[in-house]
Length: 107
Image 1 (cartoon, rainbow, N blue to C red):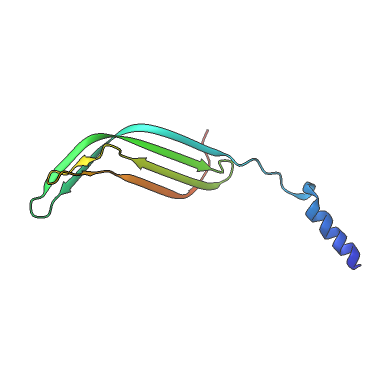
Image 2: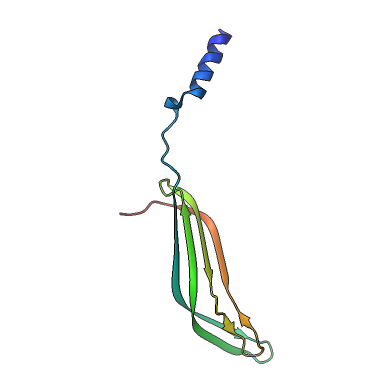
C-alpha cells in the first residue's frame, strides 16, 4: 500500500499533464518624452517663486499582463532641473513608483 501511494504521488508530481497551462510571462515597457510645469517657492526669510516648463523622460514597465494583478514600475526624471532664485543651484526631480496593478485592459 505504501508503495502504491508513493508511486501515485510521484506520478502526480512528475507528470506535466496535471499542471495548469500557463501563458508565458510578459513585460510591457515603454519610454516617453514629455513636458511638465515644475514650480516651487524657495527660501525662508525671502521666499521667491520659481517655475518653468521643462522636458521630462519617463519609463514604465508592467509585468504579468495576462493576469488580473501584476507588478508595475514607473520612473520620471527631469534632467534640466529648476533654478533656485537665491543660490547658484538647481533642483532635479526623480520620481520612482513601484506597486501592484490590479485589473485588465479594456479592448
